[in-house]
Every structure is written in structure tokens, then in C-alpha cells.
Length: 453
Image 1 (tube, rainbow, N blue to C red):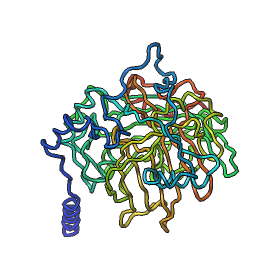
Image 2 (image 1 turned 120 degrees about the vertical axis):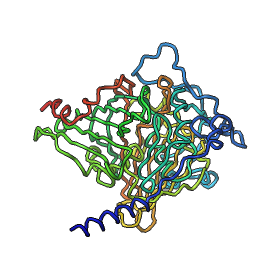
Image 3 (image 1 turned 180 degrees about the vertical axis):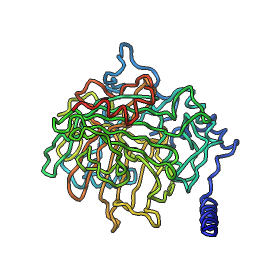
């Protein structure tokens, strides 16, 4: 027995040694965050053609009379598209389009198009978040082959990324405020062009990683705590979901609980992760497709391909102000309401890691350089054929300040079905920033105590 124990200890030590930590950048590299780079690590300068302007601080002031929690006004309401991209002129612009967007243009040539507006770099964050990001640059590092991080707090962990995993951690830990709530609906698009509401619900988000008064030393490890209660349709009313996501994805891992109204009890929900079909969205997406990507990185190997200028949805306040019926266009969102702009993005490719499995074996992510939010994502099947594509619908929130990327659409290109998740239209609360709640609010006991039937 002693010999077996010794061997097990030796193997564990060897495994730990084989999962090196990736070091933070040098102080000289980090100094660029105060000169040529924005505080989040984007290129501060305009592009050579002048079609992407220089970053000048973002949008940080709400218009006079704005009421917190109400739909945020469109700061660019008077602008018109500078060009329109459709199936007829796709070849002219394909170098600046993702595979998924090109496929949507081909699949729905008479209805889908990309209306391109002037680019505005509205992304912003409070100064204390910038200060923390600067500190993270020289202290944060990944461990466990990129699956865990340490030394980061209160800002973008890797503003000057060296690996694909670091860029994806930046997305997971992007700035969206300290605590927020919102009501939303999920709509399922059918192959015949009709749609069905899957659910209406209320979400509470809390980001302990971004508590203003905290620090890396005091941070307890959960970067995101989430509580959801479903209100419609009636047969789903009362069902609830609770998630804790830690920065230790390998050792601790996600903890999830589900309240089932029919059983009147809370149970652990270990399958709420990875490629399990998202039951909240009637199985039309996978749990790690939520918010474009969510959860552990451990199923994939991540490759940082580089930067590219592409057309992405951006500054979609006008979309958020429209009526629900106005934002749908049959097999996709209504292009009359969707705003696209030319931005620089980081491209990250994910391939299933040796010994792992995932129903989507290859994925490509397009990450906004100014916010680190994934704006577009493509998924390929085992034969390498494009299967799934997603696009976010970001809106600017000067009251936070932030560019918020909560609404997104997911398309099954082979089946001709799709869904839009976290649609706020026609609802009173659109991602309202609130005072942080006590952590006990995000406990299984609190979830059980709130059961309504």
C-alpha cells in the first residue's frame, strides 16, 4: 500500500510539472498600455485606410435625461449605411467577412445583407478597471495548460495575449459591470421561417472578480455568479438555474444547480456545461455557446491566429430600441435594424484536445480588440464543413461604461434553424446595473427558498 501511495504521489508530481504556468509579460511590454495601446491592449491608432478611427476614450456619458435601466438611446441615430453587402457583391468584401457571415449571405440571398455603418470605437471602462488591467499584465498567468489562471483581478487578465487561451480568458473576464439584472426572451426560428418563443426569464449576474473594493489577494475564485428564474410560458414558470464559474476550471470546476418546479426541490446540475444542449433554449444551442462562449476551456486546444479587420455587429442600440416584431427577418435578424462596423479582431481557433470530445470539433472565434468580447463565432463538423455560426448584438452603455455583449443569435446552417437568446426588446429592464447582492443570494438554499410553485 505504501508503495502504491508513493507511486501515486510521484505521478501527481510529474503531472503538475508537465502543466507549466505561462508567464506574464515584462514591464517594458506592459508600458505600451500607456502609450501605443489602449488600457485594454487594443491598437490605439487608426488603421492605415482611416476606416477604423483611433480610440479616444470611448463613450462614457449618457445623454441628459436618461433613466437607469431603460433602453439606452442610439448615439448614432442619424447615420446611414456607407455600404451594403449582399450575395451579389459578396466577392468584393469576403476578405473582411467571417465564414459564417458569408454563408448566411449565400443561404438567404434575397433577405440577408450586411449594412455597414461608420466605425465608432465606443468601448470604455472605469479608470480603476484600467489600473487593474495594467497590474494584471505583469502578474497574471495561466496554469494547467491554459485552463486556469492566477494573479488576475478586476481587469482584463491578459491585455497583451501570447496564447489563444489567454485571449479566451479575456472574453470570459470581459468588463460588464459589477452586478446586473435583466429580463429577456429566447426565440426559436424554424426552417419554414416561423418563430416560437422558448422562454421568458429574469437573470441576475454578479461578477465577484470585478468588485471595486476587492483585490487579487482577497478574491475567492468565482468570477461569475448567475441566477435565473423563468416566468413564461406557464409550464416553465418557476424553473430556475444557478451557476458559479471559477478561475480554477480544472480542480474546482463549474458548480450548477437547477430548481424544478414540478419536484419543488433544488438538485445539482453537472451537465450544464460544454456541449450539453441548452435546455433553457429548447436545445437549440450548447451550454458553452452561451454568450458566444462560456465555461471551461479544457475540451479544446487554443491557437491565437492573429488580428484581422472584419465587419462585425457593433453599437446596436437602435436594434435594442425596436419592437420584437421589427427585429426578425424570417430566417435571421432583420438587416434593417442590425448595425455592422469594420473593427479589428483577434482570431482564435479551437480544435478538440487529444483525449477529449466535443460535438463541435473545430471552432473559430472573432474577439473585439477593444472589449475582448467574442462578436462572431463559427463551428465546423467532423468533416470540416461549416455547421454553426453565431453573431453577438452589442450595444453601448455609457452609464456603466461598457460595450455590452449579452444578446446573440445562433444558426444551424445545415438544418436551417436558428435562435436568438437574451432578446430584451419590449421588456422594461435591459441589462440594468444594480448594487452587488450578498453572496448568499447566489446560494442553492436561496434558490430553493425562492421557489414559487
